[in-house]
Length: 566
Image 1 (cartoon, rainbow, N blue to C red):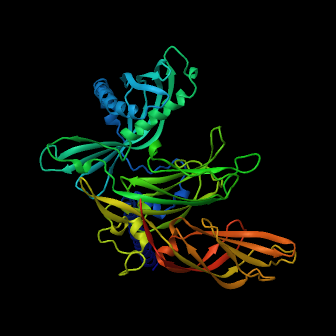
Image 2 (cartoon, helix red, strand yellow; image 1 turned 180 degrees about the vertical axis):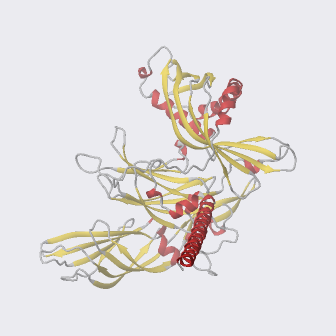
Image 3 (cartoon, rainbow, N blue to C red; image 1 turned 45 degrees about the horizontal axis):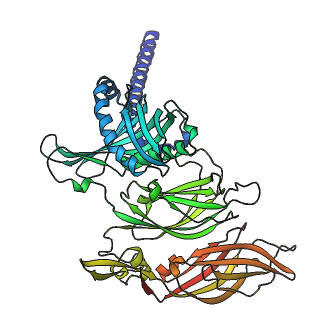
């Protein structure tokens, strides 16, 4: 009996062990399969997928998502052939840059040219390459390059006073991105018709100037003038959108050359809360605007004295050569008279973010540096109105605000439509004669109400009223006083005859009425662009120079355009 019981018990235990072992192996197999599936899924993740799963803030500083491949093989070969590349590249660069140097020669110099130009014995290092997908019939490649070279560059300089100076350019440090475009693709070796090359991005360009056997300081201002000339020459000779086209196969490649593709209209409206750079009084701000940083294509506003909330209301135009990569830069300075102006802040707008034919109203926060965003100090904001008009847009252009309705006069001017031009004849034939449209009309303003005004009285209330004025014409009117209210309702309407709507501004100042005076509460400043385009709108406008509050307005425009030949 005991034998049978032991046999049964042994078989039972053995079966249990076998079943347990099989289940354990099956579980391990499933875990391995799940792990393999997860590893395979991770292996298929792209950089963009990883960024979506985990935001950039959670990555340590040493994690870098590189979009370019390393080029150690190219650097090693370039080092070997650099003596030959140096000779060929030196001649090419000298021939390209020297005419630009002559063009930008400072007024204090009579001549400026190279007497010696070699790139030295140190080859540049390419740190990465990337391919740009543009969907066109070509291949675009971008090469990142660093160069701390030992070139031998000597400039022969003759001043207006008869002094000749040999100036050596030393200690050049350069970091940038070169763009190569192989276009168009053909079925004949080497499979592309031409090569375009350009400096796509200039991250750093440092150098020093030294007079051979002399002192640069003997002639005041010459060092900065030569440095500005060299930077302008680099900017205007090779920096994108400037590009050099090298034909490989016979053909017409004029479509690859630089040409204007549109016009950017910019209205510099105002700035607010600018950093004060003066110890006594307030800053005297002015703005510098540009798309390409060339001296003859940079625009400067007027200076507003002793004001941290300046109102400019100035209009500028910029030629655009590549809307996909170019951007508008705004820099604000404090005018110091005969001394160098102090930098307040800068901002930029990418042209690719603008919708063609549509006015964009933006407030841009000023920063210290557009490349390195490490300074979080608040420097103020600048207000712009932007309109990008591609060439040929007037053909079949549709009113972006009101479909199936004829364009307003402002839109015709801003888009260069036919009604903004008059055809006249001269001795050589027919030429287009541009006409300025004076946007004249009646502006109907209804001051509806205000909300959440800041208290000014001891009892935590205010007696607000609104002064409505036109900046250019000086016409003004005011609402009635609403006693003891921080949310007053006026519902008062005023009509203003506007003689030049494109350059006029509407200013609404809110005051607290007192028996023996008045207290300033805040203001709202509006251009007339939106109401001219839309015809009529109702909106709540936040108050400037106030802790809180907003004005509820209704604006209506009744146009009466007139024309004036320019």
